[in-house]
Structure formats: structure tokens, C-alpha cells
Length: 355
Image 1 (cartoon, rainbow, N blue to C red):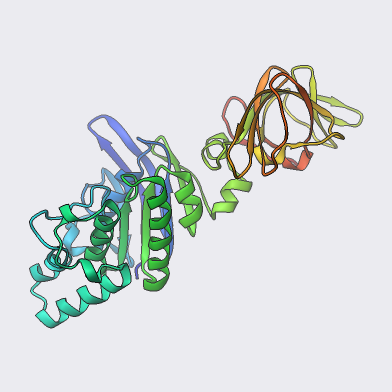
Image 2 (cartoon, helix red, strand yellow; image 1 turned 30 degrees about the horizontal axis):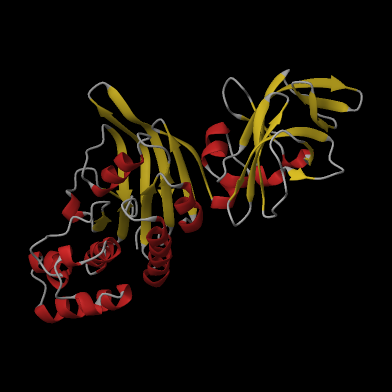
């Protein structure tokens, strides 16, 4: 297990900046997920840690030692790629043992390591098959097994599940997390899928535009986002954003969306214009609600219902585990607790925290 530190790291491709000053500390044994949209720099950061790319500026340390000038093979890190990267002419056994053979490990050591890794991953009956005889999930297990046999200080995963179907991704998420629990190795996992990030991470690193937007436990980012990017990227269905006017009065500040009063915040002073964020599950249908909304579209999911509503001329998604009989065009009432609102500055996107 290893501590990994990234200090003021920048990466440019020519005049194009990709990473714009990254500072990140990963504790020994921690499972950290780098999440963000395509092009945000998360895979580039992973490749810098692995030594597959050179930093333009800054330091990368593993167990306190700077590794900027060390080649990948000397960093004692194993990487699992999206594309599996298996040798097609080799059996499962030979793919898993190849790195150990290159290091001239003893035959008994190699056999024992491959057997143990195969048992952890359910590959015992597949040892003599070639990659073309395996399913996508089995190939990914072999790629993971090849990393495990090396007993590295850290595992780096670069979107390893993106080529799998939804059901297999769910199964492999469980297997990777269970494997991490059993091995206790430091793991850095890159994905654009926020469900993977929420379900797998000890801590999430949300990235956008080559900058870390927020670092924290999954529910911390969900419940207490630092800005509109994090609020909108983490969560499915995504957080609703409504442009609102804040009108001060004797009873507090009234938030209006068009002509509709959304809430009254006691004792708060706010800018005239704000963006109001509401999680879809925090707006509830209620005959006693005081926020009118018109139904636009209803999507039953089996697990629950997503209702697309209109408030003051703006759209809002509502999620409920119930199955309400809603019809397009009808007007319903919503109950929205002021404490469930998240406010943001419309210009910067930064969070406005209430007193």
C-alpha cells in the first residue's frame, strides 16, 4: 500500500493546458475515484501518476519519494485499462504470469500468485482459454488478475467498465470494490459515470476543465456541493436548476421563479438574482403543498416515476418511488422545504451558503 501525493501538477500539450494546477493527497489503502466529463483531465492525471506521461510542472510522490523521473516499471504501480490490453495469442494463465516472467520470478512463485489471483476472480476454470474465447467481463477479470499477481503498491483503473453492458458493469463494480476490500491496496479509479463514483469511492475527486472542483465522500458531494458543476454532475436524475429572484421583506427573503413563490427564507440576505438547486427527490407531491406546477411528461421507471414539471415557465424534474396517476397538462401542488434548496451565484456558479 502506498500514499500518493500530487503537488501543483500541470500538464500542457503544446500551448494547450490540460491540467491547471492539481493538488491531491491519496492515503494508503484508500479507494479514490476521479470523475468528470470527457476531456476534463482525469485520465491524463492517472497517466501522470503511472508514468505514462511527463508532467509539465509540479511533483508526483509515492510514499514520500518524488517519482517524476522514474519510468513506469519502477513505480511499483499496476494499471488496468479500458481496452483490457491482453495478448491474444496467450492463454489466461500466460497473460496473468507474463509480467512476473519478465521479472524472472521463480516458477513456484509465479504459479502460486496466478492460482491465488485466479481464485479471487473466479478464473480457475478458464486458465487455458485464449482471450477470444472469453466474454468482456472475463477479459476484464484477466486484466485485473494480471495486475494483482504483481502485488503492487497501488492500482490504477482507467475506465475499466465502459465497454461492458449495464448489468455486467453493476456486477464488476461489486467485484472491484470487494477485491479492494480484500487486498487493501491503494486504488485510483477513473470514470465519467457518476453512479460508479458514488457506489465505489471512499472519496470522489470531481474534475472539470483541468481543475479539481471538489473532493469529498460521495454523500458529501451529493448533499453539500461546492458549485453548480458538482451539483449537476453528481446525482441521477440530475439536480434541477431554476433561475430565481430574491425579494427581501419583513418575513425574510422570498424566492420567486417567474410569478411563482418557491420559498421564503427567514433572516437571509441574498443577491437579487440567484440560481436555486433542488434534488428531484426533494420536491414532493402534496395536496397541502404551496408551489403550483404543471405536468409536462411522466416517465415510469419501475423503481419509481420521473415527472417533468413546469414552474414559472421553467422545467423541474421530480422523482418519487410511488406511482402517481399524473396526466400531461394537469396542475399539481408541490411541497419544497427551504432547507432542501441549494443556492448558487448565476455568474460564477459558486455556492451561496445560507447563514
